[in-house]
Image (cartoon, rainbow over all chains, first blue to last red):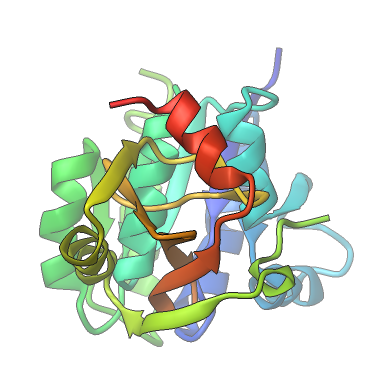
Length: 153
Length: 93
């Protein structure tokens, strides 16, 4: 059965999130893993509009709150959960998804408060990819390239 | 359809802050408190936060922390209706 990965998006106020999420979805697909995007309407539309022919993502899109509901009732689960974190709200979603999913958790931390948030993420999940970036996706891209070393472990 | 807090007649006690601050306020104001895991359903909303998540009962109202991805955490005071008795039954101390 095909493995699935949740990509839980935060508020799309920082440009680096959408670009990084689309790149991660592309990399996951290369590893035979189906990405499922979850976020609010704007976060999902940014992905959808940037990739109209679905070259980089071929998975589903779900409202973030509906995803939490489906996880809590056991209707869905994922093999991997990547949670984008750049604020306290992101930490709340990370902790909640960690509590509800049996999947391998990865926090992707960015933005102005990346350092402080990284410490909190480390208390919640094992894998944390963190860079204090807002506009430049390259440092996070490099970290995502390294994910393939433990993705199938 | 996504669960929507806007359908509720809520009062905002604290806004655009952290989950920890909301949790602190609930525990400070309410003498009757129940702690639940993330994903607990109340008023058709699945609660989000760093566990354990407090649900406070203040008279005939319920206090919860509500998280919005773009606006932070809010402490909401909501008329309890039938939810108070349900919570008491489900989460007896």
